[in-house]
Length: 214
Ligand code: SAH
Image (spheres, rainbow, N blue to C red):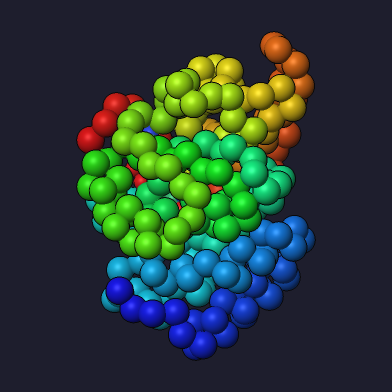
């Protein structure tokens, strides 16, 4: 693994300015993006691309989300320190690291065994408050519920009730919903035992959420 050098730090500062220009205003989110060395979450052959605002391939045909997408989803969640957050789709672990850097207690789920295993090798060294689970995110983690926040980082046609039930009242779920080609960023606030309020926040493209484990 390569180190985090002043060159990388400089590149991150530029990335943060770009995200600011693109409309990200939450200073806590920008600070976390500034602190997490994204290049360590990518294959070393892609190092040059770590700090441009693009998604990139990781193992198993999956992707590390575009920094703007990570920033936007995190901003919509409204993360405060100590919140209990469920992330579905660990992938590279970058988004989980951003959430944990903001002080969240992160529970992250991945359905592809190789990704679940590999991510822990380097992420564990960063000493962040992240717990890793191998399983189908459609089911969530009922044994650890309720969560203050739930973040889905794969495209889902519609949000399963099983996940909405795992939110605290007042809790927020953010997910890209819609067809495989393009999704609407959707934020759902649980306003009561059985009441929810949703809003939409632009179009994005994610890899699909799939059922079962692999
Ligand atoms: N958050 C990631 C981006 C993940 S890409 C990052 O920061 O890098 C989406 C991930 O969701 C992939 O790794 C994919 O394997 C995973 N995924 C898809 N369906 C899933 C499911 N049902 N449960 C858990 N993870 C799932």
